[in-house]
Image (cartoon, rainbow, N blue to C red; front, side):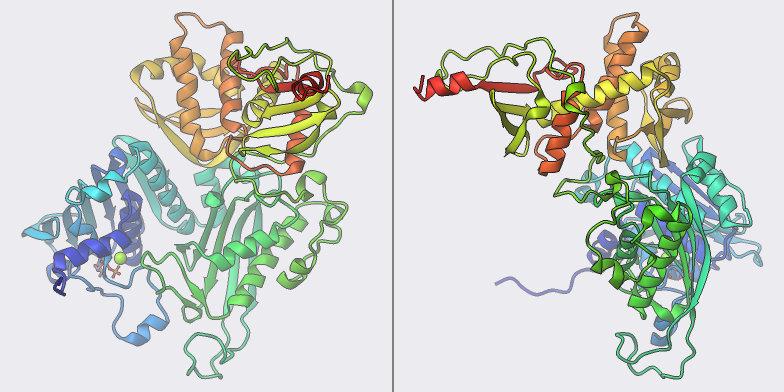
Length: 629
Ligand code: ADP
Ligand code: MG
């Protein structure tokens, strides 16, 4: 029988580390929070290899004397809580005393710290949770923690880390957002010798947004201003502290921040950042409030960009509900939800002609829920409710069917699908006959979540949804490029892509053309580029791959690439990455939309890489196979 044993402390720490320390960015988060709690005004983060090799956070905060510095690495050692009552009103970002021991148990750590009123500082070295050395040292006032070789002793965790650039991306996004939440502090982020962020102290949130995200990003955002509401008087039926006195004065809630204009449509909620009392959280209730505010403004599976900063009395929010402190509970949950929803909704309505929202007023959450059908004046593209479609890269557009006479008859080259001699004669897929209008098709369904099954008088059709959409996007992109510049979408946080030296050289050559194609890239030092703007429809997660593909393809071409060939390459790659994927369920509306778009393509027969898009089973073949003729 297995014996029940108390786990060794060291092991317990590693388990706790699994909760607190998931990846390099979570280390950076804990260390930044410590620095902010220490009253720092200047915070600097240096990383190497996406934080896997090195993370160093330096601050000019209050520092620690040597006793405190030693204690800080004990589990549940914290200066921020005294008794259980303190838990009811946590005013600091940290409070559990778990971060430092957890981090120290899975890395090599050096802490150097000095309170400004002391002459000497303390240097502590810990490897994998083992104290290696403690000594006095001369150092600047404040604290500097250096974390090397993260997870060196936990291979299972190390294996799950992503590429350096991906991990660096997470860190950059995190530091950027902490910088947004603390405009009064100076934040610096460096990767190796490249300065990724250097945001000097400013006095307003607006200044900080401008400083960190830039003018163009600001143009896509609506400032929701600063709204305050008194919280309702305490009701004893809420979850929180049931014995609390009903006479307690009601607090206030304040919201400020930025929300994106309706034309900004993101494929995921990654652009939504919510801060409660300047703590970055992921809160279901507030995410829901945001979704409600955008109902009928964005298609159901598109997400806005939101930077929301809530201030609320510390007693009104419980932050002690999640290991990473990213979830919270509100004492007045429903009230906070409705307050946030209305603040955003009002900002959206004020930023657009009211007529477009006729019927979808600034109602409460309940009213919104009771109004399921979109108001008639909402633009169709925004109002379409669609069926299950994964969020990626599919921007909903209404089917723009021209009057019949204007529709382009199918005139692509006949694609011969080699008849397989071994296959039964029945239903051999044949080339597309010309002059068949795809827009005439009735959608019968979807096969394998990948192919649209359709029919018309001439027979049965199978359409590969990915290559069909690819073709549509390819032509659209190329057309846009040939008539000018392709519009890109600014990313909330740049995506970093590391280039080989060869690609670095190539980049100089094709940079201009990339920019004309909806990219904006900046040098990030000798090896890395930061993608700040990318063609619309490309999910943030696909940008790195897309760019690599473009470089690879151009590199493969020996010597000179003509401008025209380059443009085609780029358009083909962009189309491929933005197109609907296979294995993606599509609703009927979307299938019809896609067929209508395809029917208008110049060449609906083959994808940009030459694969067939459409297979046709002619009526005659079908009849013959059934021995009816
Ligand atoms: P917590 O933040 O939950 O208290 P940590 O393990 O993160 O727990 O930190 C333990 C203690 O170490 C903190 O309570 C604080 O007193 C001290 N500490 C950590 N980082 C710093 C820092 N950068 N400056 C000053 N004190 C710090
Ligand atoms: Mg902490």
